[in-house]
Every structure is written in structure tokens, then in C-alpha cells.
Length: 480
Image (spheres, rainbow, N blue to C red):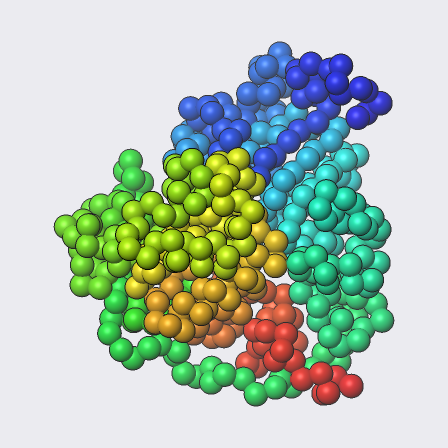
């Protein structure tokens, strides 16, 4: 590395050459304030006070968290923690920056901001090595794409050549949606971004195949299972939720979207009784999460954003069987097979990768077959094969009557699987409607730091109404 033998270098010397952002930002955060966290490397390299301040101001501003300077890192949202970790890593502008899934917990605006900073650092001469499953936003910035499978490099080429040769097809990865559009329409040059698509596919189909009825709010007309009225929640005098009103009927599959720090996870924690509201009413299946917590736990399942927060047994099997009775073995074996955890059955959950731990945590939420399932960012760190397997299983549960509340930053997952979307901003509900209608509100989404998946964005920019949500809605014949 940089012409040096890393086995002979001490950590302080390594830190001047390479910065690292881990997949789970919590493992590298330890200071009392964000400012202390980001200044730590420069301080330990014995920089002058003036130089430390310059490093601090640069990195906080670069990732858009200057307003979080005095906050305690572990009180921040997952996406905000990720930005703190990135700010720390870039603070002394190392020669090499290694990022492991750096955008997995970021909203659209945060992703664009971080990638723009990384791009500028790269243009200034910094080498960037980025491990990533979600390539829609990342691909336009890449010079090379290295594909690994089972510990081996199976391809190393330009992004265009990798996608043209269909390297991803057999290893469970998902190319950018613009590439999928180009492949579907037989483009000779594959578009790597939305702007590429608008230039290359000038005759993009103005027609779609028959769509679902977008005028109809796709809501089950049956029993109301979640009811929230005039809900307020403050944390250390900071308003987190502000007059939230929401009802969800039994059998709905609702996507909960919003920028980092908008209150999505707080709302979920109030639903399952892990937080107490300052004001307002919360009911799940007519149960009060505070008063009826014991009964509620039999009705609702919850998957934390960080899987480590709910894993405590010494094996995957023990984790799943914990608290079950009767036919526990049959149920657990079924869930283990569905989640692809057979080879990890006897392993300690905390020895697994982030994506594998996520699957274990998901399995623990499913074994009790709850009536309501609240899932917080389940696709973080997962490849497309496991995302699709998991979401197909969630869809099957929903079809069997389980009400799903899915918190996600993955707009493609929201577009493909959710019937209804609720968009939050600054602790309030900004949008609530069927998925196609919500994704058509591009200006309001932008106000919340969000944007729809590339296919929908292309349709809106081309003036196609209603916009497409899924690739199978494109009328290929109209393009030819």
C-alpha cells in the first residue's frame, strides 16, 4: 500500500495513508460528541489546533452534519451515524479511502452528498475502494468494477463491460436499474445513469402495459389494526414527532419513507411500546403498547435497524427457538430454510457478517407469525438475491393477512413491493397515498430529500403519466 509493507507499519502511520468506514458505523464510534469523534484522528496525529479545526469544518460540511456537532453520536439515526463515520474517515484526507456499504443507511440526499464528496476527493487524487451492493447511484462515479464471488475475483473491467457481459446474472447481484432498462430494450450502449438513459433511449416507451388501477387507494377495507392520533414525542427537548396521525388497516403493506432523522424509527419504537409518547394515542389491534405490552408482543413482530440490538443467544438455532413452545422445531426449521441460514444454524450470531446477522434477526421476528410486522431497513447490507428472497417471503406473509410496515431507503423495493407509502419529514407526515401516486410527487419527495427509483424518475422527466414502477410494465413492442 502506497509502496509500503503494511505488516511493518504501526496504526498511527497507517492512519495517515488510509481511512476506513465500516459497514456498521456503530463499531467505530466512541466519543461523547460528533465534533470529538470527527476530530479524533487529527488530534492523535498531533495536528495544530488550527489544522484540526480546518479538518473538522471540512468533513462536517462535506457530509452535511455541521448542525450535529454537539450531539451524542449514539442518539443519532442510523443514517446520521453513517455520515459521522464517513466524516471521521475523510477528516485528514488520507491517500486511500476504503468504504464498506457507505450508503446503505442513507437517504437519497445523503447518498448524493456523500458520493459527490467521495468523487471530489477522487478527482483530487485520493484512491477510493468502495464495497457496495446498491449500484444505482454509485455506478456513474466508478472507473473500475471488481466483482467477487466465493472469495474470488470473477471479473475486473469497466462498469459498461461488466454489465454488457451479464456478469451479475448468476451470482445474485442487481445491476443499476438504468442498465436493466437498457438490456430490456436492447440498447447497444447501456445507460449507467438517469441522464444517460434520457440521452441514449430517446424513444423510451411512452406506453406501458396495463397498470394496476392507480386511482384506487389500495387499502384493505377491513378492520383498522394500527391507529395513531395527534402523536407527539420529544427527546432531550428536541421535537422528534409532531402531531402524527395515521391509520393502517389489517392486511396492508405500507412503506414508511423519509430522510435520516425524520422520525421513522421513533414512530416504530412507539408502536411496539419501546418508547412512551409525550402526548397522543397509539393503538395496535386495539391494544395500548404501554399498558398491554405483554399481549402486544404476541401480536407484533419488530426487526431493528441494527440486528445486533436483538441478538443475544449463543447460536442461530437458539436465537430462533427462544420463547417458542409446542411446534417450535418445525417452525424454526422452516424459517431457517426460507432465510437461507442452514449452514449457520449452530454458529454464534455475532460471528456472522452484517447481512447474515440481518437475516437471523429477521427470522426471529417471523417465527411467532405476528399479525403486524414492523421491519426497519431490512435490506441493509444484503445482496439482491437475499433482498428478493426476503421481500418475496414478506409479500407472501402479507397475502396471508399479516400487516406489514416497512421502513426503507430502497426506492426500488418500495416501488415493487409496497401498496401504500407514507413519507415523513421533520417528525410529521408529508405524503400518504398509493405507491404510484406518491412517487409521482417528485417535488414533494425532493423536499424530503428523496427521489423515486430511476425507472419512475425517467418516466416523470419524459412526461409519461402514470409513471412506471416496475420493469415488467414497460411495453417493449412500442419501443421497437
